[in-house]
Image (cartoon, rainbow, N blue to C red; front, side):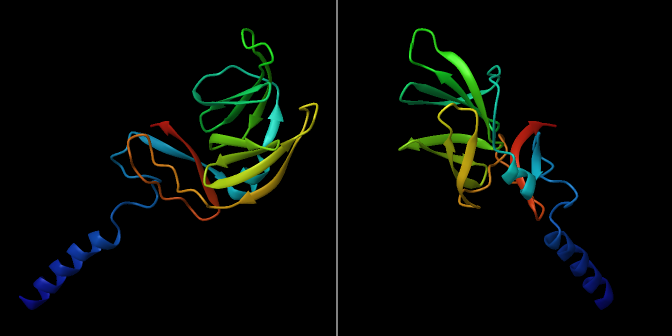
Length: 163
């Protein structure tokens, strides 16, 4: 009888140690799957590209004659807004995991997933330089339905997509 009780206690405690399979990246109750990048690729991913269409707009920021429109978790569309009645798309700042920015003295501060980065754009908007990166300053983003992900070592969670 004593052996059966010990066996039952051991089996019940096992569920406390492994609440869900770590082979899955998020709680099985979520309708979303986490998207990861390797840390090195993530840090090297910030770039300036040709303009594109806006598919999933986020926050909008106006600075001088420019309009910045967030493409949620992908980057920022840059518009020449010198004629507000007719803004012209000029560039896209690719920053995976980004949802917000602020600008002061021509330095652009972006929350890139968990990191805070500062970038400088060239005068002709043909290149950019990451001048500073502070890692893991922001909390990891939750899935749209409120679940946490298990992020493997050396990876950064940059987005959520439907399963």
